[in-house]
Length: 76
Image (cartoon, rainbow, N blue to C red; front, side, top):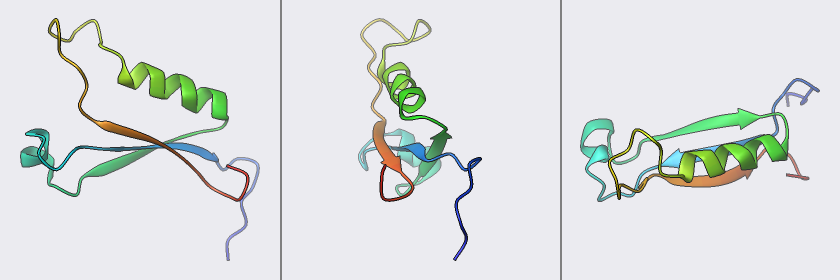
C-alpha cells in the first residue's frame, strides 16, 4: 500500500451534478471531478466560493452542482 507523504493533499471537494440536470446531457449522468487542497480551511473556502452566485451568472441563477467535502485518511 502506498504511504501518504506531506505533499499529498488530504482535503477534497467531490463535484457532481444531479442526474436530472441538463448539464449531464453534455458530460454524462455519472460525471464527477475532484479538487484537492492542503488544508481543511482552503477546502472550505473553495466550497463557499463554488456555491455562491458568481458575478458572471445571470441574475437569479443558482449553481446546481453538488459539492461534497471529502478527505483522505482517518483524520479527515
